[in-house]
Amino acid sequence: MKSEQRLILALGLSFLLIAFYPYILKTFFPSLVHQPAKTEQQTPETKAFTPAPGASNTNTSFSNASSAQPQALRAPKFNADVEETRVDNYDVKISPAGALVQFLKLGDTTNGILINAQDGPGSFQVWLEGFEALSSGAIFERNRSVEKPGELVYQANLDSKIRMEKRYMFIPEKNAFILNLTFNNLTAQPIATRYELSSQIHFTEKSGYDHAYVEFNLNTPEKIYSKKVDKLKKEPYVYTGKTEWFSLSRKYLSVILKPESKFTPEEIRAKALSPDTMEAILKTQRFEIPAHGSASQDYLIYAGPNSYETLKSFGFGFQKILSKGFFGPLKIGMLLTLYWFYHWIPNYGVAIILLTVLIKILFSPLTHISFESMRRMHALQPKIKSLQAHYKADPQRMQKELMALYKKNKVNPLSGCLPMLLQMPIFIALYQALSQAVELRGASFFGWIHDLSQPDRLFTLPFSIPFLGDGINILPLIMMGSMVWQQKLTPSSGMDPQQEKMMQFMPIMFGFMFYNLPSGLVIYWTLSNFLTIAHQLIIKRIPFQLHPDTI
Image: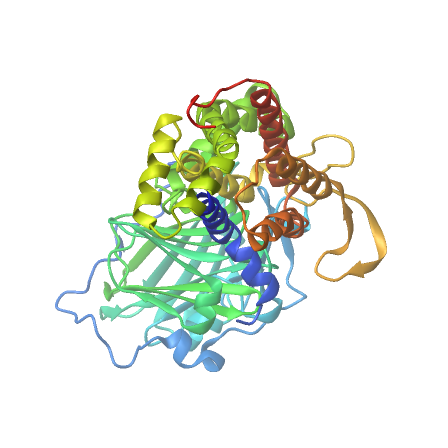
């Protein structure tokens, strides 16, 4: 019995470590659309970027310009006088210096801010080889005469040799826009060049639970790579293989950049630009701008919520930022089931309840086996202790007698913990799904639960409790009570005193860990506990008999 209990305890603690590692680490160790068809913009002399004939892919004069000389090549910082424009579903501010997006907010709430350049130069900065300072920080003029509805067009001449145009074309009702870069050669000689293009995301999660979701994702033909922002703070990430698109993501929102047409970047770099800004920089291969001609390239920019269905609708695999990882497929299965329930009953709190009940029903046979095994093991304890005392000097004989006892009573010592092991992937996948489901943000349930993505704060205290904050959250307290009740129903014989004390401490530890987690997660765990208690109460009413020779 001791070995079984140790195994159960080890599995439980392993689950806690896997599921709650990001929260524990950040709390206690903070230091440690397919695209719609767009109007053709090219003239007969304009072409998409192609490698310059005979050009080398290396150039000693253009080596990571954006990071080698950040002060000289960075555009001026945030300009409060920049006019704010409402385009489609965005509030956007574009600075004349470099025609950079300094501010981009989705919707009307403050938590929809995607780019906020108060501490930096802004996003979509371009460093053109040979014209780095001008292309990145020159004053661009807005050309309203060529703009169409939903477009913002900026132009600047670079040393009387190149006229550079940046065109932002917003796609209605898609939370996305096309960034078109066009370089017009004003000279009689072809110009071989290349450039770097930046992309950013603003995040407010400096530490704690939400901070664990701030990451850079890069999708290649083979796989998707991910780097947490804390890793990028220590060391920038550099990738030189084939790239389809990359994303800068936080818990509920992402900025995704995908080069259009058959265009292969030479290099992608990602780094933490400031404490609240993550940046990725795309470096192109060398290309040629014909004499008195032009070269043009489009980028699809998605800047919106991490909604699985929305991301999938573009047809480029953007949903991989949600389905990546070992538990990714299970996580998406949980999300799709949650959406299905919501379709029939449009309340995400109810959808979580129905999903919890469904999971409990699916695993009830395994749970029944586990509880039944624990009951039989509990009833066999006197006989087990007798055998252990009788054959203390002969461990091999003792083990043989114990196996015979188990076989005679149709008991498998591991059957009590095996169902837990089989259910852990489901638990972890559901935890991840509910943690990052953007649909829960702002979704109310009933009563005092107004946002399933936030703790269920009933009221605020005039003071703060260490590690817990100043809110009184009810669901975690109910959850703790359910765990205590469940422990009293679970046979605990065979545990040594230290193990028993540790198990008694588990409700407190869970209550502490769940206290400031989203109420949607706490609803799942609390209801799951009560369903387990109901199952245990039913099983306790079912009589069973041991083998007559046992006692």
